[in-house]
Image (cartoon, rainbow, N blue to C red; front, side, top):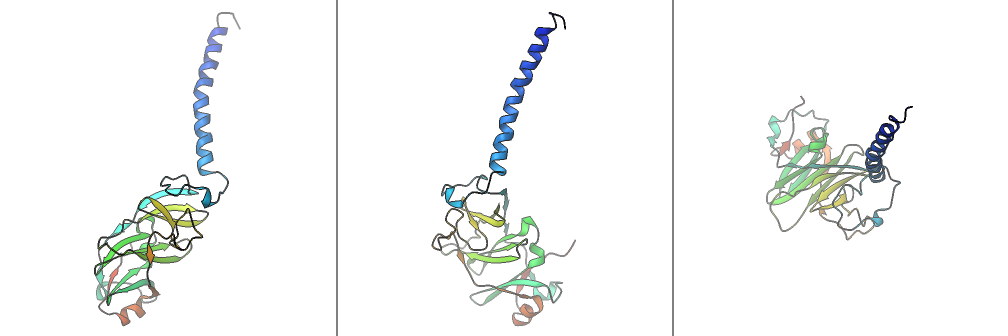
Length: 207
């Protein structure tokens, strides 16, 4: 190598180092956020609303007051499951097979004057229904991601477990629930339809 070419190589190596350092730091940060060893929820800040607490972070809005069809128009096989609720004598059903995609795992609805949120963890096959007193508007519940294999929901900027309704930051505290759970029936469509022939149902035709 000639003396004149040495400074050029030194300059190239220097530029490469300068460019590589920020990239290495960025990769290290993302690895720490999304691939860090599992930590206990108690290590998290109480009002955290970002993706850091989650093993698999993603936010998806719940489906708001989807169209309903009368029971006699719903082409649902008799043996398929629905989630049925009764509010002041008004029946409503939600076809589980129609809730098996990310955009439909959470349905924010209103029955009568009561907000109801129907949720379905398709991986664990867990259904939970939530409500809140003092409002007649649909709740703004969202899918919040996964934490240690459990489905998270998000409401009012806070994360909570779909299966229990308990806040992510205090999962062992039964009093720290962001929303109330409400009774529901998980049953065959035939059985629900026969008991409640006037029911409306959330149902999407298979594509």
